Length: 161
Image (tube, one colour):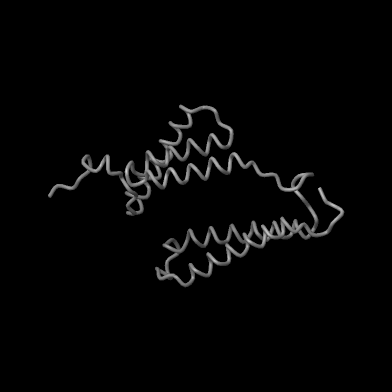
């Protein structure tokens, strides 16, 4: 849908901000120390994220300059969902050290699923548990990065002295 006006300032501002964020991440990744001569290394994922942000930002800018909008009323935002996802992130941050990655991230998954309209608490919990356990295994054992196990579970996995 196009509007009578050529430039949509809100959409152009959002597109410029996303494009700038992508450029900033690419620049900072370029400056960061790391294995520069390897294809898959510490710089791969930040570059992929930066490329995605640049593509999305440029696309938003193109649509804004063409006068295209997503909705007749303009940008629609579900503030309840934004608040719920933000609260979930804060709760995960607060529980990460005490409970560990798997329980804290499972709670975050459930909260985000609820924000997107899911009402299946048990299925969301099981799916979140499976995904966060897989991510934990991949990061801890596949990539040798240590996600927090949680103070509650430290005695179960404590290294012998």
